[in-house]
Image (cartoon, rainbow, N blue to C red; front, side, top):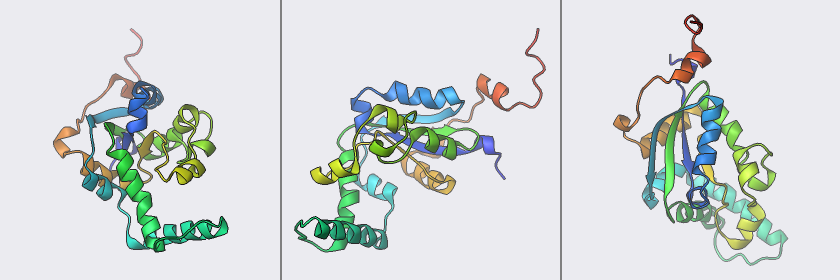
Length: 200
């Protein structure tokens, strides 16, 4: 069994985060809490890579599409395609956004990294994300606005929501040889049971 301090998660700073020069601000949030970056690269994603990353099936498309159709009916808006197509559009809009420019992909390691990163990043919708989180502090988009404009919500960052998802996503974006195993000085203070050697 892997030690909790070795847990890895996957993070992407999306095109809006890169274009708004927030890379340093975002990374500093992870570093300040004691997490360690074990892989990082700037790239322009391929559409196929993004569809694989979001990993949704027809049942998901149908459920989301049904909700959109219901909302359109309640607001007297036209319905011009089957519900499942509205569901597919959600991921299609995300793929269009993610392939629009460079992103920064990272593997981040540390005690319960998935949970810690999720807490730091905040809720998916910036409008309702807590102050003190990355999304709550650095952006202001909302589902309503992105829905009106028929585009993906611009929320700066993606992070894995479960360890098994992190493992799956990391393999899509990184080769195993690109992930570096190393010890940082910080880890002694964060994790070592015996702190002998601090005093001279």
